[in-house]
Image (cartoon, rainbow, N blue to C red; front, side, top):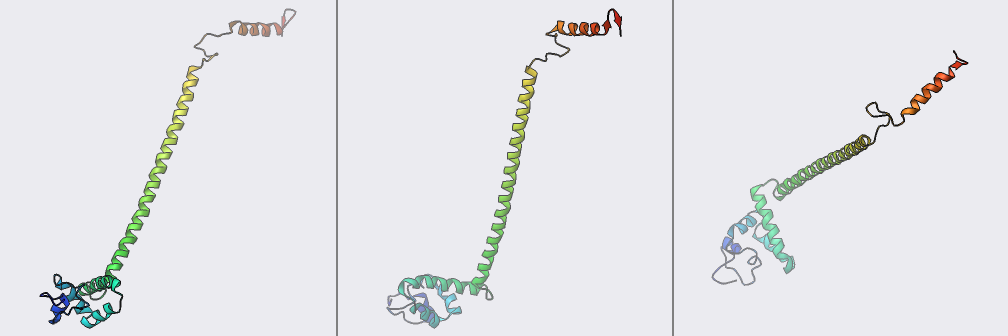
Length: 170
């Protein structure tokens, strides 16, 4: 990369950027702050050694991880990325507890709705039964005519006859 532009690492180190610069693909000249954080935390030599020990297909991801960790350390020197991970885990725990609470509320409301539906069905059945009873004639009701008027009279006469013997009442 000995073109007119040097990578951010070589610019920071104030040296010429060689063709085989290990850092050039991962620290472009357009983002000098990315390498500045990495250099501050890990140093140029350590960063170069870490990337050289990895196969080519893993270097880009490793450079991203190194950059993320270094930015996290610059922002939070004590915890770095562990602080971010801890915050995210706390958010996950909070979200999970809210989810459990919400599922409980949904189950409660579903149970209430089911109970209300059962009560409504019972009321409809009671109403239907009451309607059937109202529709059926009440044969011995005082407001209706007796369908067997002579039967009651005959019973009364039989009773009166059984209480007399040869014209004498007992």
